[in-house]
Length: 442
Image 1 (cartoon, rainbow, N blue to C red):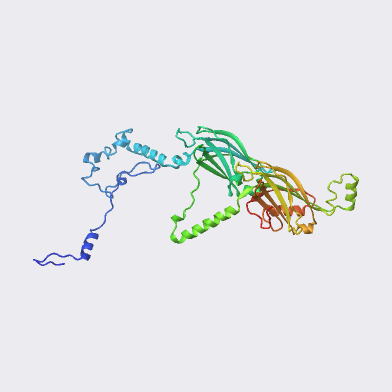
Image 2 (image 1 turned 90 degrees about the vertical axis):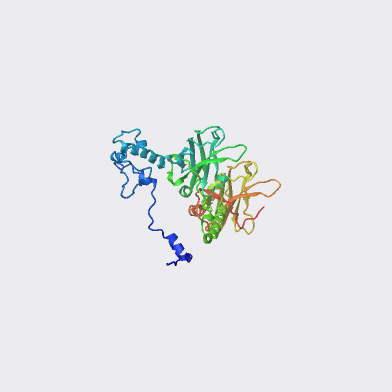
């Protein structure tokens, strides 16, 4: 670029940008860590920065005088040598200060214990299908009230399918951060399949009378860690609930798919919502032979001999546990209806008595269907639990269907009944909120 005398200097935009963006070779910016390196605790002695690699300008406040350089930079590190020897204790003081920082930043001092700890025991009784959870104590809970204390209690849920039907709760201890409960909560009707696929969630909450209760922390334990008929002790740190993934963190292309999958997931969980447990007994009584009839008639018993002339199915409704509360008082008025479908003549309906204000009713009632084994293999037994309401339609609580086309525990219970003639087979069943299609409301 040449400029003649008497003419105005003009620079093109290309030349202007070239001058601005190309100032020369870019040098690394000096950082404070270059002068005070962070060393690992296992290093024997701290090494000073290499002056060839990190030159210190003479005008810098960190530059050393010739006398200081001969002393090895002891005056520069004088704050670190306050508790050490002025001559050669610099390495020891630097290491000690560095150990303190490592201890603070270690995983043992994070907020994993800021919420507190919970101590409890679990025991599964295989013979009675009962899961006992003994909540012992909590320590160092996070204060949630203005007075620096909390009113803690513990509530239990079984996952997946957490709802009010399987919620258990301890008593509340007022104004305490180290509560001791020593309270045993029992789940009834827990099968071996539940022990393999369920997870117990223990939530420690702070009770507030005027506002909503606040969650302090929770702990989750897979039930497969508990061996049958053995007590297992747990001492865990309370944690925050796992965050729910938000579709806003995804791209525009995945956002709609994520919302669709979440709605589908919620529908699946809603359709499989647990409404309680039902203890059912099945027994197929084979037809009596002539000798059996004579013995039964001669014995004078006569009870049930008429109904057993051609054999049939005996259905026993024993009890229910952890039913969903359908009334405003927090209880239900449950009763059980059973059908043997298809029912052309509409004579297979049986109904138990109504139990008032309870979520764990005991019925102990039996019903008999006169039917052959060949016909029974093509039938479906529908068992439903209802909440009785005076003056309006009854509320459906839950139900279960047993047939050769069922799945899981329902199929195993049905096949065991058909294979073992004359033997009473009892099994717990999970009540879901899915209303059978063939069910008629009455």
